[in-house]
Image (spheres, one colour):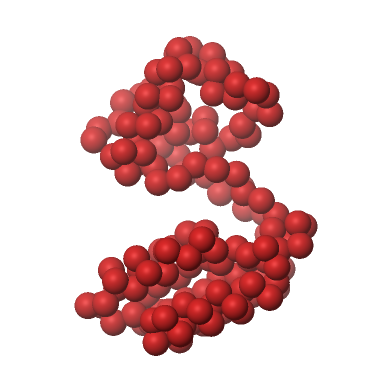
Length: 149
């Protein structure tokens, strides 16, 4: 799929604050000068084509009593897709990345309680028979992460 200029404008705009109104997509569509149904159609098409995989807010889990933790695993290359699928079946897995390193799978756990991190990591380790290394947050940095489309 090739992105046109409107698709790029949509992707760039959707990374900013979503208006807290009853029809946020209508507001964004108006900002972009397109009808709301076109905005929604384009977002659905990009999702269907896996240009985007998910869309949603970032929550401060710790402020709500929960926790985040960066985790890593060393997966044999021939087992990577199988392990990836099983790890991603856990609703606590916020996102998952493959890296070219001995620790080739990195993912973030987001749980409702701090104890949920260990419980989920232990469950994944038990299911896969592969050690899950947990790297808890020591200090928080706001980096304002954006990807220009």
